[in-house]
Length: 460
Image (cartoon, rainbow, N blue to C red; front, side, top):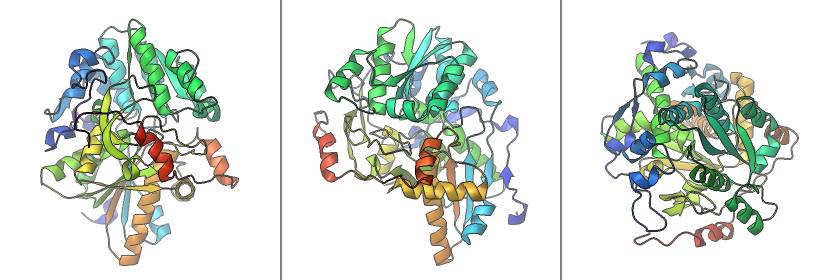
């Protein structure tokens, strides 16, 4: 089909919302390493996990073999409020860059939460409600996940307790207030309301917090409060499963016009957006049907892929969660307070970590001033103010498009735009005022986190 007939925005019909989530683990020759019980060192059983997570989510977490898992109709009905999400051809950006590359982006910001997080929030809240629970607890960093979960819980009539990383709680009061508007109880983390929070504050007075800290507090409350379970917005296998709707819709939209991307780019913090975007394309690569180049983009100030170790580690700072084998900077790693671009988690999804370890994708780390330069350029040209997290992917998409300009190659680039940045204006203000700085941890800084990795038999 002629390129001229490809519209700016490619919309799928409501009936084309995926009927099933795609589980990329089913096609992985080397499965992600199992979660371990930190007390015994043995793989975590479904019974042990059910004390933390909802029962059906436990089944999804442990399922390495079922390629397609049906999406309940109630969840698909909720998806219809904001899905299918548009796939946009960045004609204006291409023209401004003077590149022969063709650039597409999947825009996940067309809902009140402002991000892709709602795709998994409604699924996890649905299974909690189905199990007859009273409520759920969680953590949130920049606030997208907490916002999405508060929306899902309000829709289903569940209590929602959110521990928000303290630096974000203070810098993003409007994101906090959106959560409260939807009925969530929001607590800055670390806090004095939990035993693990008090311990962290005693050991690190004045800390600005981390996702690892907030996870510890949320898990403590969930496991000590009857009728509650813990839910997580990234990292876990179940979350990547739910987020596969991003990639499935992207592929369906591109297939309508016979377009095959050469390069697929996503921001990488814990892995939910990246994993969701690439999963069906990665499945084709794993099955030997097609080849793609995948690029994970992470912040230079929190470089778990590019400078982390592939090892078992705690998912939380308080060391009360199961051990996951992942690329990690150490559960005690806390990003510099000057880091404003999101993607603050110390580790990466076990699924994505295994794919990266097996050489199925690349990773690059970028400094935040370069990220916000790309965000500003994109906002002025494409008309969308992007979330700082998404802007990591924008940065590398622009870089790859400029390489095509140098070489004359007409590559097709697809990247994920996770959402909007309208609640991230403190970060944009710092950039506009010229006071934003870059921080890159030294090898000595990282060595501190690595030194505290748990001792696990057979650990590399």
